Image (cartoon, rainbow, N blue to C red):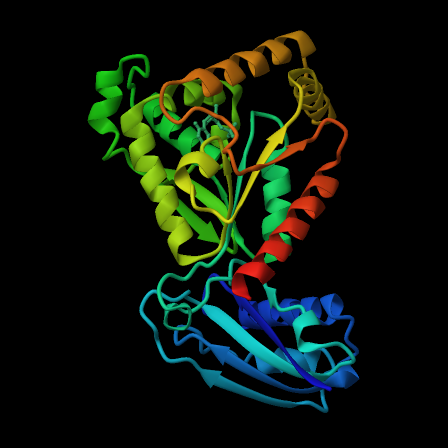
Length: 348
Ligand code: DC
C-alpha cells in the first residue's frame, strides 16, 4: 500500500552544501527508521521556507541513488511565527505497514509545526526533566531530543551564564540588591545553531567557560534570587512556545513547563553521582578528590532543594526514574518510549 512519511529538518544558513547535507541526513534517517528500501519510494515532495533558495533539496535524493522516484521542490508561503530555514518533505512509498505505523522524522529542532497548521503555537509536546546535579540529566535529555527531533534546552547553562556575567562585572553575588539591579538588563543571550545551544555574555560566546567549578558554585547561589529566576524562567518559556523541546533543570516540571505532558524526575544517590563525576574528571586526565566532590554534590543538593523560590523537587505528576543502576541510554530509551506513547494519545 502507498504510505506517506513526513519529515523536516533545519539548516543554520542559506548555503547549498548545508541544504543538501541536511536533506540527505533526513532522507537517510527516514529510510533507516522505516526500514525502507529506496526502490519502495515512488515520489518525494520537498518544500523549503522562503529564506532557502541556494539549492534544490531534491538533488540530495538523486545523490542517494533515488533515481526512479518522481521529485518536486516548492517554496513555502511565509507564515508568521513559523520555523526559519526549514526543509520539509513528504515521501510516498509502497509499504507493508499501516499508515499509523509509519515513523515521521524531525531533525535539528524541526519539530515545530507551522502555526497556521497547529492553530496557535508552534509546539505541541515537551519533555520536562528535573533532578539533582550530576544525575546525567543533560546526557539523557540530549539523547531524547535527538531521538524525538526536539530542541534540547539546557537551563543550567543559562543560569551559569548569568552567574558568569556577575563574576565578569564585579557584582557581589551575596548582595541581593546588586544582583536585583542588573537582573533584567544583564547582557546574556542564548542562541541555537544547528540544534546546539550557545550562550553569550556581553556578546561573547562563553559556552565552554561556564563549565568551571567556580561558576557552578556561584550559579547555585545566584539561582536562589527571585529577580534572576523571573527573567530566566520567562526566557525559557518563550523558547518552548515555538517548538517542541526537551528541557532539563531543577524547576522545569514544577514551574517552567508546569503543563508539560511529560515530566521526568531523575534521581541517583549522592555517592553514585560523586563517583561518576570523579571518574569523568579522571578520564579527562584531571585530578579528582572523591571526598571533596561528594561534599560539593551534597552542598549543592542542599542549596538547590532548600531554597525558598522554585526549589528542586519532583512534580507530583512526574515519572520518577532512579538511575543508580541504569545507563544513560537505558534511561533515554525509557523516556522516549513514554514520550512516543503520550504523543500518540495526545495527537489522536
Ligand atoms: O544543571 P547545572 O549543574 O548546569 O546547574 C547549575 C546550577 O543552576 C544548579 O546549582 C542549580 C541552578 N539551576 C536552577 O536553579 N534552575 C534550573 N532550571 C537549572 C539550574
